[in-house]
Amino acid sequence: MTRAQITILGEFEQVVFLAILRLEDNAYGATIRKEIRECTGRNPAPGALYNTLDRLEEKGMLQSRMGDPSPQRGGRAKRLFTATPKGIEAVAHAQRGYQKLMERLTLPGVAHA
Amino acid sequence: MRRADLAEAVLSLAAPRERAASIAGDFLEDDLGAFRFWFLVGRTATAQAWRQLAAEPKALAGIVIRGMIAQLGYLLAACIVYVFLLIVISILHVSFHTDIPDWGDASLQWSLVNLLAPFWLGRWMALRYGGRAAAGTLALAFLHAAIDLCAGLVLREAARTGAGTHIDVILGLKLIYWDAAGYGAVLHSAILYATLYPVVVLAGAAFFRTSHSGSDIKC
Image 1: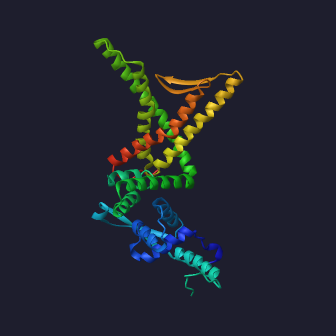
Image 2: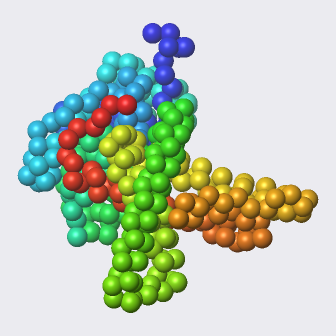
Image 3: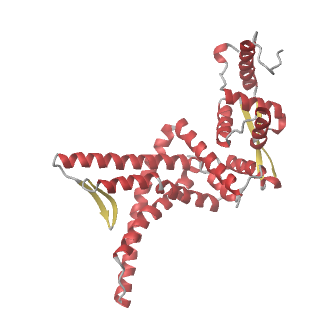
């Protein structure tokens, strides 16, 4: 994939994407919010999160499918998200960029590869 | 009190029903207090509607034009209801010698134009546009408010130059009553369109969504 073909992800889009990758087969609205909260300490607004998920799906970086309904959710199904190869390539590209920027930098409390 | 069906109906005004149900399920799973639950429902629906406004301006322009035509139809229906009520009141007056006070007639007119017609329009929006009803309603409210403000400014300028200074459309009910001398009334109307109007239209749409659980009509 050429540089021009790779879609540039925004910072919040990357955070959402990485949370989905971490959650594997259990990535849906509530768990994604929880994962972001636990890993980054920030509490994303649900409106921003769902808009980002819709946008990433429209760009072809995520796929969603409806799961089974559960009583805990008032009989409502989960909308489960999975990453597409295009999305994984875009987030890998963004992370390589961060790593390059981090080279030869020493930040307190940050382990370097 | 958390009401999942109502939350789902509100969210389904700004998202397809299946997605709205999953978002409502996410909020239920989060085990939030009632205030936080409804705050997040409102905020999420607003964010989704706002995104649609930004992402699909052409589609929403079409919705707004059709919405204005539908509103005209519902205002005419409200005029018929008003005439019917006047006949009933006249019969009561003749039979029982009861008078309706001036404020009663004014309240009736105000309710028909500002509550009943927009409520009907909300039901139509939900039936026709489903998950885009909220964005369409917001766009319609902005347009109405802008038209009122612009008409007020034009009439005020016209009054300075000595040209005609009012536009009235009265079919029993005062459908349009723009008067340069009463610029405050035009401003009041614009404020109503920016505040009460979207609330009533969305209430009508949410009422329709709670009472009809079928899938969305594709437009």
